[in-house]
Image (cartoon, rainbow, N blue to C red):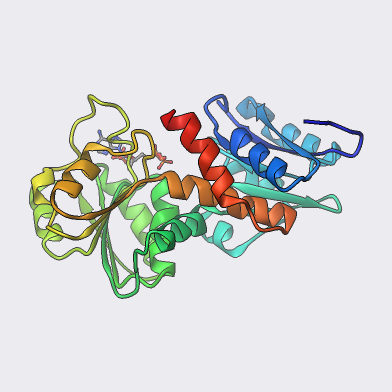
Length: 282
Ligand code: ATR
């Protein structure tokens, strides 16, 4: 890589940021298109967020991603926020132009693109989504934007589920349920697509989210976890003849959309996928 006085700088702010795969993915994308730019991780102590964002602007950085725990708090330091980010109250991508910062949320559209790529149709579908964290907001919003008929939110912490349900209810038919075997059993009898947005399944000794024998035959099951590539939920779904989708596509497309916002060029999605697959699965 040849750095020059004209090299553009992009990056990601987070705390911690060491685990982020974005530097790898975005650098590969810039290289593939011959764009003279670098993408670097910036670990920012939470109390320094405002100073860090002002610094990025002052240093004429062209754009940056925002990850945990800054997706919500970063908004107060921006000049503009796009519609999805405004609704979700969360920004994961910032573009700096003429000293002005605009915030975007590419998680929702990234999720939608990953489903389109896998041929998953959302229009008129009944969805049961597990989880009510930051990821659930973006995913739930996305499925309603994609035309889902009903969204059932199931969460262990019911009051947290209610808060997300109230927000997403502004965009479609949303019901909230506690994570209980009887409610899950009833819901899954009338569900076209199951989506897991919780962290359950990332570790080998994680408990099951629910009794996976309840998964109906032949439906679609999506897990936004990408490591392991097949969680126990996806394995069980596969055995039931379900179509399964993991979270790698969401990771790729949220990054691809950010790249396109910054560069106004089509992202080299296959290059981004290849470097991620190599890094994660070896
Ligand atoms: P993210 O921003 O990635 O969505 P998060 O905000 O920490 O992360 O949300 C994690 C989600 O996983 C929550 O819905 C959480 O449920 P609670 O709201 O009840 O905490 C869910 N989760 C984590 N561990 C869980 C477990 N062992 N069983 C059920 N749900 C779990």
